[in-house]
Image 1 (cartoon, rainbow, N blue to C red):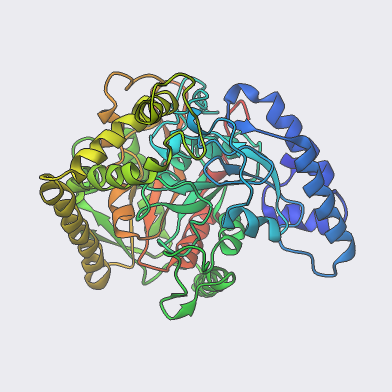
Image 2: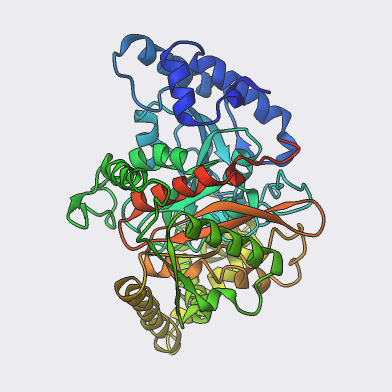
Length: 508
């Protein structure tokens, strides 16, 4: 076992670092060796040992000199290649940005660095975050550590695979329509998408601006807390960043305080820690299309929650099926606008041969973007065009509001949290949907509504399925706005009663 894998949590790693039983440099060196030895997974797009070890040495100085060093001092993590970084390339897994190096760090990156975290580099993803299997990366797909013939999920597939394989103890991801929750589910790790606006989008390459939100991926809920709390907080450089969350300042410490209060209440509950918690189970999440092995694992997880005192309530989210067409109108429309900046003029790929400015832009975009990105740009441009804007885009925005209202009615009248599957099936094999890209869109049915509503939600492991090698199944827990700490406390209590989050692939 590699040195950095001897610790089962960030808290255990922090204790060893502060006691000087291990140094940040030793942990970083061990993790870099693991990344290089598992390069077949294609989880990382760019590493630079000199940069990583320089950060590790800085962390060691803090640990030696500070009476109370930052909470993440010396902890090795990695960033999805959608966050701009100084030093490491930022490509968004696209030929369009193949050699781009940012002059500044994204807010998420800088805040985790201020908390003492040491970056190992940049993680693979679907190009510009457009995909559900990490097959759309211009630099090749990431492989699922549980089965190297299976996808790890997307678009944060590199992040989930790196955590599942034990290359890092935690990683950043982004979630536009499920891109933290879905890969976490398919790789057997935990991931959370916070309420829209609680984590800064500054320096996060945009896909769908009204949907994109950063979130961490780790093995279990307590490590998610360790990463999400310092990531969160108001940022004046992001116009969508929230200054307050339900009357509480949006700042580091808010989520941890909420977690601690909820965890204490659960501890005070004794053998029935979840007594009084109403769990909404949407009828629409258990219809045709849900694989039997996934349904069985979700049912077992619900039974575990009931055994801890929670009560199950049947609810309806009647517009669940409409979340797919709604999302795939709004997100491509916003992508069409956001990606218009890549025109071969200012930065990014520029074609070598062209006769005029128009041809330069056209050829640069054709050469730089992959087929899925081009597909979504064309869809988005179409729905925003004259004559179709009212019929498609405005109508989708109306349905989006109705979907959000359905969630609010459920929380107001019936339940405290909503629980169900993350995906309809376990991970598919690489290339299965190559001839039918829309099939990947349909697999997002359980995650898209949450993103459209801007709600917090997370995925935690709850079982294994599949017909060949065992593949992970994820449980989705959805909360009302600004309830990230309560969701993490609930997930932590479930993980105290089960061991699915401790299961590791044979290759790891």
